[in-house]
Length: 143
Image (tube, rainbow, N blue to C red):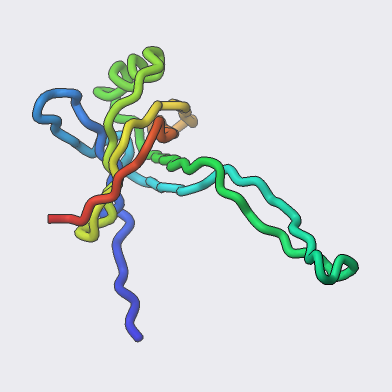
């Protein structure tokens, strides 16, 4: 069976501009690496078998909360530094979409939780960003 593959450049993190209607664009500073991680906080509970209390019990997982974390990296686009610094300093959320090629996307409010600029001698500066969902995330099929 053939695997339906997707190039890494087709995974896009698009940030909204806050206008009406809102326009989403993929920032040029996320140009080499991007990722989306779905996670949950959960409580693990051991549930004994009342009919056989000496037998090993089974563990159950109770999901408490869901989250989506995004990360991106690339060569620094100097035109984006001020807007990302302002976003980080504001503590505000922005609407963000995470596109998976022509399959579809997830959308919700995200906070910029990390913005790092690094540089090495005889190389261009790099940037990494991390975003955390701030409330519910909705999924959409591509149109």
